[in-house]
Image 1 (tube, rainbow, N blue to C red):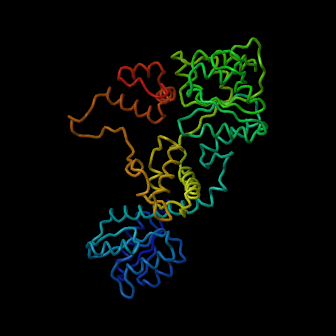
Image 2 (cartoon, one colour):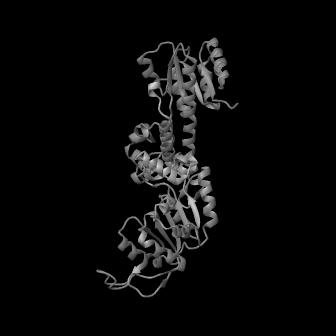
Image 3 (cartoon, rainbow, N blue to C red):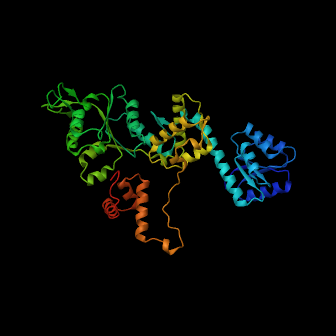
Length: 459
């Protein structure tokens, strides 16, 4: 069994040290002990420790002095102070000395174990945060994409395979996951990097303007068309065209786009001849295109044309330690822009970032860190520098845990809660939710309509 943590117990009563070593050893900790504070100080400088647990009142050197001196040489090692005299003054003294926690005798075993586990977790997170500054530049990345998680390594693998392909790529995923960065990385790493990178948001303009932007127009094609203009498909020739939010493209324009992609030619608005183009197409969307097809809001033939190579960007909550890696990167970026000396994250702040669900994904994390850098008065981001939504976040659970019959719910209500929880977990993607639940999409739609939950993103 792996160790829960490496402890050094310091108390001038030998019997107390022996008892703690026995009790904590049985709970899975590696425990060393000494009755001499001076020896403890020396060992803390050289030994691989996770926590120092020291008594307050000792001969030669008290626990507060030991705490200060340990932290002076090993600031990353948390110190937990214990005393037989619990008072506000002693607690304040311990905190001012830099103690991570403060416990009073007689110590309850469970309370001590919980405090030590928290301290070990803090130590290891602090160690991880310290490592991140060196890891950011050396991190596995593809273009400006950053991350070492299994989910991101799978993304890099696909990108490496298709970077020089001419096939159309469909990048899907929740808002803020970096879909446009994937398109830019494919362009900048591929054989078309010398050509233009052109992007258009299919949801950001009315249908008539979008048609003119994509396909171009001739002089006099419509009011204000005083000069001919090449469309973006032609302007992107030799490079890459990003069709951002293609799921929001007006249905009436989809057949014309389909024909252009098939024939590699476009007919500008008002023209009587085709114009060839040579651009690689990358399309992105946060919508559930299969659901839109069933609702007759997206053409199935266009879906198959753009979905030659499909890449799903993972949400940030599925990327584990990438949260801290990205956070450190954003600290460096925004500290440099602000002209402030901010070196990284305090351990407690890192814990909050890791616990949060990040519904806005990488974009939300970047905004969070930009705010924290602006707010902080120290060289590290502290918990108080984080937004309220991150500081106060508590992960929700769908549980029915009550012995009171009046609080129990029907099986139908349990089903409703679970279905909605799954839908939340997959970012509102109804196709994924239906697949996870093992039911058809139409069945899911019917249930949502019955519950009045049919509307929403990705519907």
